[in-house]
Length: 307
Image 1: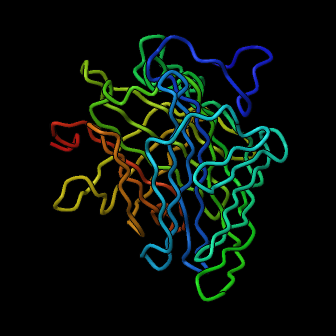
Image 2: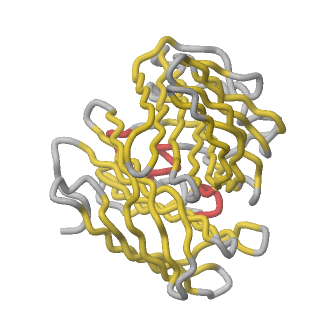
């Protein structure tokens, strides 16, 4: 959990866990242009290395992709700005606004994430206890928040696209021990009516179920008391085709929604793979939304939780 006087956007000292991680993540989708992206910088102090995801897509197809999994360690952090492989992420207003920029001959990005719902630690709000696999082995602190995403993307040939979308961002510090998690699935929709959901269900190698979950409505995040999900996969069993979710918030309101895939990309971690999707979500009353759909799998393969 967040310690007094610690800045999660600045440097947070590692403990002795070999997979200690500090990371900064951003995603967005602009339905008017059918453009979105996934950006993540991960810093592993005890391994003296860093990694980068930088993937953008349009109309369901890649626009630009840069993936670097074993970069040199950096002491820089979001608070002052950190650059890896040409990608710069920087906090503009603590926990409220941040930017992502990139400028090369074939692709240029100048985007800003401005808070809609404040960042809230889903680990703390989920209250899974000290033995919860997410809190113990995946992250000690993991605030997520919804944002308006604005700025421009410039393509090869000079086409400049004005972005006006929405997305999540998150921060993390603590272990990131992928080997402890057998499988997980995730839904992070932002609906047109303002409802936002963080729903993560994980299966640890010790056989336990684990959750990171909360519901954003009426300008704040509240706890989620129950969630049920059914995921339909493609033949590869690692790509989400669609899903059905039912979540109950702490006020007793039930939110049912479905999902369908817009785009998919895979990110490897040696004996674990994360499959990142952008999904279109639909509430039971027809209200649309967009956001992340994610799942991860430990190797050797032992299933995706749907068997």
